[in-house]
Length: 340
Image (tube, rainbow, N blue to C red; front, side, top):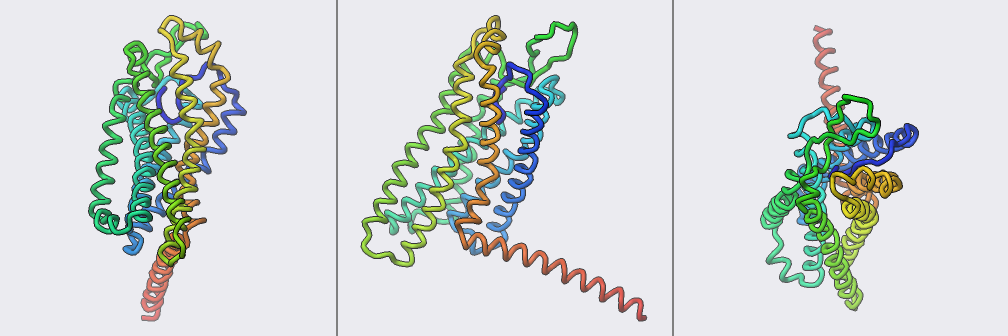
């Protein structure tokens, strides 16, 4: 399997373990959906929040939202990995969407950090280059680039007959997973290289960018109001990057180990049983961290950005005020009708 929860399992996971993961997944999904929807609404319903930084963050929230919407399907596969009930097209599209959103989130974090680098280190150039219109166009290009990069997944995954370990006759074992063709043709290895480059190259860029930003802010003799704002924004983005690295590193390590452990079709069952039995539990932990990364960003914005907190509070307060106003109007109308 190629996607968020990752890889074929070589062992039958205990019901207790799957139940524990389910108990973690459900509140994580609900919390993440609420937070990311609020982020999107705050940016698009509050004009003062449509800065280039928050345009990136709202687009990243869309990506995280799509990842979290795929979580119930992953949870279903955790309880019942086979047979796959939705057909080959749904298998390909869900895996493609997961990989596309994964790449898209990485690109957003990278380009947002580069935009902050320009704003801090080259402020005059940033005023010329960084506009809302160009930011929106760049965000569209990031989504397009992520989709093109994830396109090979459509050829890599599909519904195939699973390994029959029980030898109990004719049992429907259709499974949505990485195909034999992907392994034998080298497509899996090539996609693994692309996936790792998508993680390692941005990681190096982020390290260099934040080092330069920190050096620039440190060497400035006086802290103007603008510099304080830059420091606060950079601090928030630094925490987001740290959370991204901590949550996604086990995910990429696990997928790399899975990819390297693949053999030919004839020896795959033996490989799974001997090599990957302990990896199954690592995969579960990395999957939880993967979804945590999609859910935690709105919480980080709320903790580290007073501007974001005020915007969310204003949005919720105006919504509750509108509802109470409508309720008062309805009650007044009913009272008038009764009086008449």
